[in-house]
Structure formats: C-alpha cells, structure tokens
Amino acid sequence: MPSMPRIYRSTPQGPVTQAPEPIAVIVTLRWMTSEPTDVLALALAWTRTEVQVEWQFDGHPRQDWIDAADVRRRGQPRSDAGRENPATRPPRGLDTRHPPRW
Image (cartoon, rainbow, N blue to C red; front, side, top):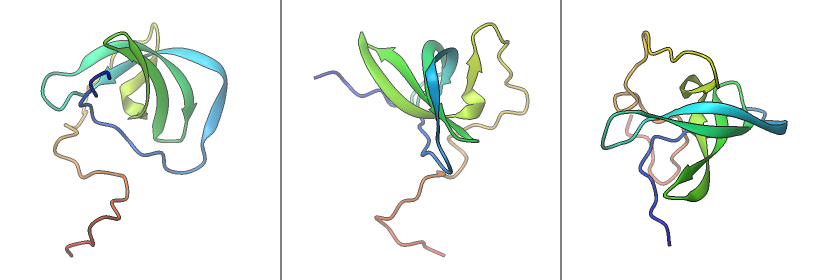
C-alpha cells in the first residue's frame, strides 16, 4: 500500500465545475514537513476557491482538492507575492467531530 503524502488539502466549497477534459497545470504542493514543491498535474474540477487535481506520488496517481491559489496553468509564472503560510491559517473545512470552543 502506498504511503500517504502529508500535504495541505482543501475541502470544496460551493458548486463544482467538472472539466470537459483534464487541463494541464502546475500545482504548488505545500508539505507539512518541508518547503513547497511544484509538480505537474491535471485539473479535473474546480470551485471558486479550490481545484481538484490528479498528480503522481511515488509512482501512484492521486486526486486531491488543493487551494486554487496554488494551481496555475503550465507556462504561467509562480506568484507568491503576499501569499500567507497555510500552517498559520485556520482550516476551511467543517470539522464536525468537535464542537466549537467559542
């Protein structure tokens, strides 16, 4: 069984648009243990703020929802200007396991 990559993922919010065919993109994966890494991927679907991408990890295909700010079409420059660190922002998904503290 392949190992699970420890990256920051998003939860899709709002209506999802499916791509008629996969779109070639570059994804900046934000690892929980190291520096961000750019990888080649295919965009399969998106919302206003998230993109579902298919990429390779240890030779196995994966599909994950990633923050749309970390996805760009191939050939576009990377834009990190004013980009916040995802480790310092609160999660955007709903966690129903625990009640809110405040």
